[in-house]
Image (cartoon, rainbow, N blue to C red; front, side, top):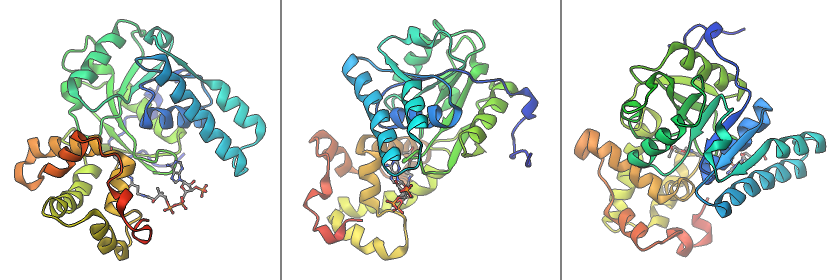
Length: 295
Ligand code: CAA
């Protein structure tokens, strides 16, 4: 049965999860919906602010299942079952009978708090609420909840399908049963759940951002993205820094930098150029990089 992970409460306290809600239908949310449906084999409903986003999220899941089918990683039956489990709705009322709802909306504290306030008016008293925040305070997110004991941080890494780690964040009032459920869920999702302190950017991004902070500082000082990537390629990183930035998304990277800068000051600089690139809506700064310099 395996050893209990450090900090995990007794697994006997864990509650069953028979329906999952995912708030948001963007990059992380779609990946989460796929993972939950595939591994837990329970219905998963995605919501977003309009039908087009919802449809895009569901289409993403179906597209990923089709890729797995083409690679013969799933049987046609399993593919159909996974697809059927994932539905979308523009209304959070679809979460009324969910046991576990995770938000993966924009990385802004006030937006996340608003989402949780809306959710509390809809979900059952036993429903666990989780946040996939990369860097914001789970304690602050819980502060205005009617039931702060039901909130837990459940932070996945991109690409969700292949990254094995899951940071589980306990806020001061998180209930033992909620935490035990989070650890059991991690196991059922075939992820390694680790308990981390509710500190800015938790553990992984805090460490990763020391490297990325220097990379973006060099970029601010005039080092082209393709030069930084080419310089770091022989270091054996799984992805070069700007390829990683492209995958994570510049706004997300900027928010993580800002959270760390607010918590730790100059040790974590915020890149001026990342801001400029976002302001100018530059979606792929390495588009101009020579082919050979991309991973
Ligand atoms: N979605 C689904 N599956 C993916 C994928 C994606 N976006 N990207 C790669 N994969 C799968 C591939 O399909 C492949 O699976 P199969 O073996 O079944 O075909 C497997 O991953 C390996 O892929 P590749 O052989 O093509 O490439 P690789 O060996 O370079 O590995 C990688 C790809 C695992 C993504 C690797 O490059 C890597 O680990 N990159 C670093 C990722 C990272 O650091 N993520 C953390 C970002 S920070 C974050 O997410 C936190 C935050 O909150 C901001």
